[in-house]
Picture 1 (cartoon, rainbow, N blue to C red):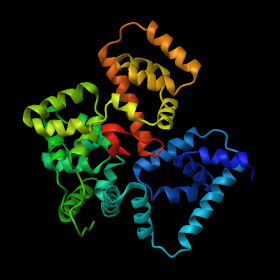
Picture 2 (picture 1 turned 180 degrees about the vertical axis):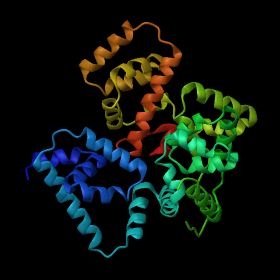
Picture 3 (picture 1 turned 90 degrees about the vertical axis):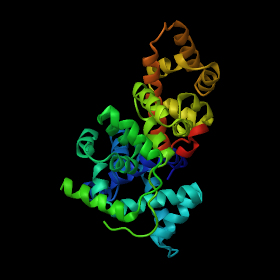
Picture 4 (picture 1 turned 120 degrees about the horizontal axis):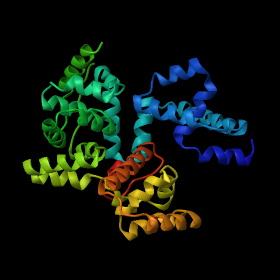
Length: 339
């Protein structure tokens, strides 16, 4: 195996390496692996498969060799899967964040009805839960991924949205028995067991994560409603919302990775509404020629509607969050808990 091939494999993201590994397994074996993955993971790996271009035989060998070594090192020491997972997550995230992630994994193991919602179209989920009590809707949205929940929220009546977000923000966990009962109800509607401490769902951070994915106009209207009802709670949520200006907290490597995934026309529009400090941070992480072209385009571009600027910024933020969730970049600033 050449040194060049090894370095090429190392540059691949974890998702790309997983995609290459699955492509080498064959259809039936890959299907069996995918059955054990969540909706988001399948979508990410599937997208990576679709975008893979030329992969050399040497690079495939490097990835398979690395995978084989990892499996051998994990299984030879006699550590159980749960214990191994706990140690890895604590190492990577620290005790508090690891506890939250492990709790969510455990919820997913026993939640069949709720887990199925992750695969459903947002409109279908909204239709399914729209007549439920706002507290039930809040629990469901707190359980799902933030971007999925934001799409569902946008399908619900305007009068309900602020109430649901406030309930998510003040949700202080859910008793396992209540979660199991809700899971059974959901499973019966479109065709569990729990024990231990309160499940970790909800909180101001969960509410902020969902708000992050809303359209700018809907976000503004929603926060206005929440502020009118509870100013202190609105401030807590707003403090945790990751905004475009927070991108200045990205380290250089993360900024470069983000810029590789952002269309130049969207970046041009988004920068019309930013201060010079963030612009300089972005220019610094581009090639000299690309930075000069972007500066020229910004000067030549006429006035842009604020709604267009906000929409472009939201799109870039959504890309940043997806890269952060995949472990490709690390978000900083107010949104440091997104990492």
